Structures are given as structure tokens and as C-alpha cells.
Image (cartoon, rainbow, N blue to C red; front, side, top):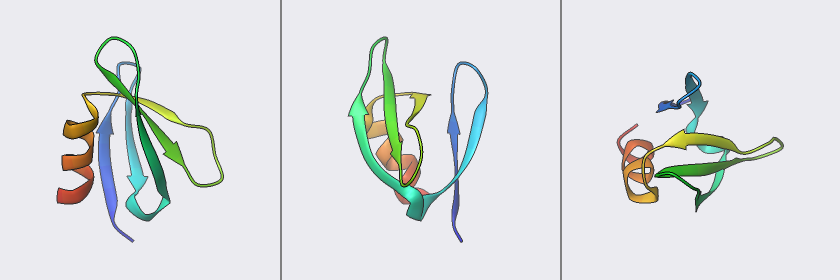
Length: 57
């Protein structure tokens, strides 16, 4: 399993990369990260920045 660290204003997440389903723009420079079988996470950064973190792992 490959974990990715995603930063949030309320705390940080370690997410299993293969469980990420989609990315969507949110307000205030944040990105919503859709999770397979769960609720989306609101993380800091643009879609491009979050996608780069996921790909770099």
C-alpha cells in the first residue's frame, strides 16, 4: 500500500493512494479529494498541487 500525506487546515491525513477516486476545486484555494467508499476530504492546495503530491507519493 502506498500512503500519501495530504495537508488540511483542520489536521493532516495519510491516505491510501489507490483509494483516491477524484479531485475537485473547492473554495479558498482548497481541493476536495473523493475517496472510494467514503466522504470527500477537504485539503489545502490546488488540484494541480494535490495531484502532484499523489503522483510523487
